[in-house]
Amino acid sequence: EGTREAPGIDLKGHIVIMDEAHNLIDTVNSIHSVELTLSKCSQALAQVSTYLDKYRARLKAKNVVYIEKIQAILKAIIKYLNPTSTAATDFTPSSAPNGPQKTAPEPQTRNHSNEVSASIVQLNDFLFTSGLDTHNLFKIEKYLKDSDIVHKVQGFCQSAEVAIADVKRKQTMQIKLDETEFEKHRPALGIVASFLVTLTSQSKDACLLVSR
Image 1 (spheres, one colour):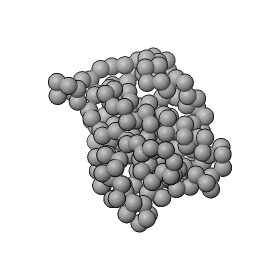
Image 2: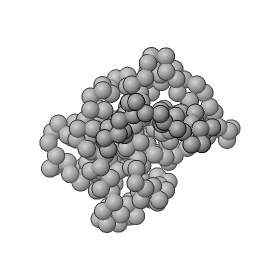
Image 3: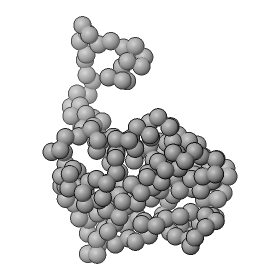
């Protein structure tokens, strides 16, 4: 609806003819689905943490609190997708001036038998098991939208300064970052934001397909 309203398209009283209609079901399913990978979560965590490390002194206390909550959510999702990881529970960019240096987790999507484990999980079970039920996702979603933090972080990470810093920091962070991901139009944090919107807009009977 929002896509139609933006250019002023009104479909009332019109007949819509769909080309390639056999692909319509798959298209509708993809529009209303969000795929969030461990790699994307790791990238988002690295980007947000680097951004906060750079601008913490300039940001208002409220912004710092919300960004730290976003970090906590990302760590919880990473921990859920990769239960064997302990690094996600305490990530600090290598350039942080205080405290010991920690590392973000290396993406792992396979179990010890080297086989993909997929399961259907109820939304409430996912929220409880991952620990996301302790966060007010509605407030986080609103902050992501109102603050435009997704584009701010993406713009910061696309700067030459961050690109150079990222190269120097890779071995320390131990994240397998796909270099092309930083160049893609849709930022990793944007996908996380879309995932959170999906979580808050679904009914209690909603399910997730989890592969790990």
